[in-house]
Picture 1 (cartoon, rainbow, N blue to C red):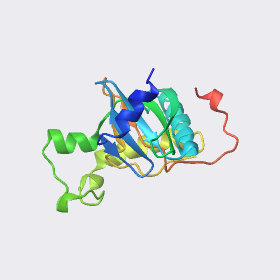
Picture 2 (picture 1 turned 30 degrees about the vertical axis):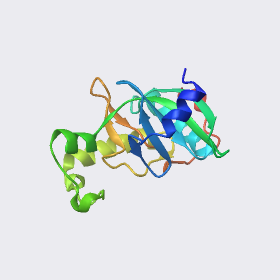
Picture 3 (picture 1 turned 60 degrees about the horizontal axis):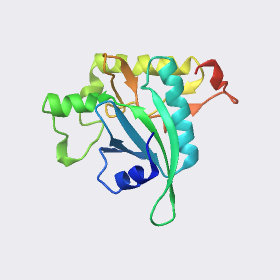
Picture 4 (picture 1 turned 60 degrees about the vertical axis):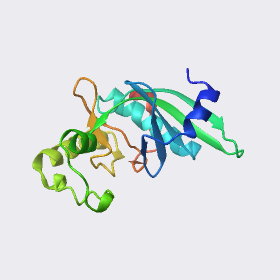
Amino acid sequence: MITELFAKALVNEPSDGEGVACKFYRLTLDIGVKFYRDEEERDKSWSLQKIGHALDIAPAVYEKFDIETSDGDYLYAFATELVITIYDILTSQLGFRPFNGWYSENEHGWYKHNEYNYIRKYIKEQFERIDIQTEDLHDKNIGFGPNGELWCIDFSEFEIEKYPLNWDEYV
């Protein structure tokens, strides 16, 4: 269990990754935490990742928790299994560097490769068969689990087509 005191100390450190919806902090070799400013966004992402894990296309999710920051605001978080993203593989392991010091999905050329389009299509099809529309499936949001599993890690741009979605059917 992640204590509130530990979580408060963690968010004052530089994050290991940052997206539009959350900041990510690595805790161990296997576990990290995603912090959101919006509770509803956290709950949506947690639920969709839990469904993705049940479909074998997302890492495991663990406890959800809230912390009060020093300025009286709240952060909403959950613990998650770690992934090595395709971006990590391209930059750290293969030495690729994005142009101009910032990231743009069109700079990589990776998007033009059939292999990557197959990866995106596979994840997209798994979610769409249960009426969840995917977006933002770039190489920082897709990676591999510890046994080579293909996993999606960002669900903030996903849209649920059917309401109410029966979560129990998938988790």
